[in-house]
Image (cartoon, rainbow, N blue to C red; front, top):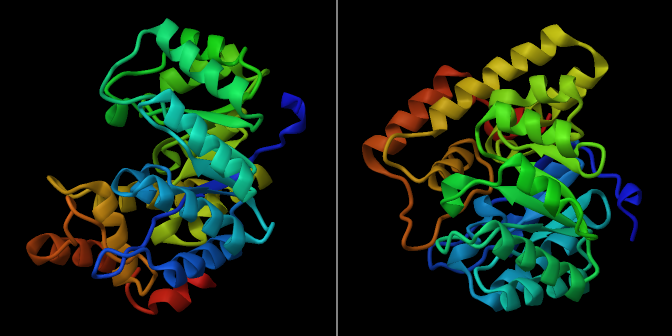
Amino acid sequence: MKKPDVDWHGPWNALVTPFDAKGGIDEAAYRRNVDLCVGYGLKGLVANGCTGEFWSQTMAERKRVMRLAVEAVRGRSVVLGGAGAVRTEEAIELAQAAKDAGCDGVLMLPPWFVKPSAEDLIAHYQAISDAVDIPMMAYNIPSATGYSLPPELVERLAEIRNVVALKESSQDFNNWYKTFTLCGKRIKVFIGPASKYGVAALRLGSPGYVEANANYWGKPAADLYYRTMDGDMDAALELQATGRKLRDVVDLPGVNIYVSFKAAMNLRGLPGGHPRLPLLTLGGADLDRLRRGLDAEGLLPGKQAAVAE
């Protein structure tokens, strides 16, 4: 594999993993969401990213979900398997499982909780690259890992053979831009929070974004990319403003964001399903608040039919 051969671009979505009321993986709902996402025009899908609640799954389930995504996509978009783990050996095992399942690459979340040094982190990614020949998208999300990947460190990661891309989800646009200017000619520096910065990042040269809002927003989440790239800035900026408002709607105080994503999907007639313990299905006043917010944005009438158009 040569890095220039990996042509990852466009709007991507991190898939939710729908669980049924008993906690089992709802494979039919998963397949339905994949079909919807492909229909929206998304160029890439991530199985078991943070939005996919990988932390609630066994190793066997994580491997199954990656294979399920590949089976459901049927070559219609790029598929990355979420292979992050605290133990390097487990990350290697998951990366190999992703390759065996037919994934086009892996999303490699850095080890969380342990806060490795720069040298530790380089060694972690290097070991994975040496063990499994599969393209890797590194992932900067300090809200989940407890530490950030500064641009200078990403520049070193970009030297690793199989690191071909970065999902920059620090919520700091300046960090994305500095990383892009340092590394953008060697790896693909995707923006994470497209609902905040999608248009700006694309206009500055980002190859695309890896968001999760297509799960509950539908086709407009992909249209933001296409309208921007077409130069239809009035439409692009309107979509950007709506995406920002919707993120505020689903980002309920004191509620896990992935629980809110699923509840928003369910309210719209989409296959969100349930979360797994320790996360509870949204209810009560929080669900009412979410329902009112979606209704105020005109997203409840018509439900799924309106989303899939």
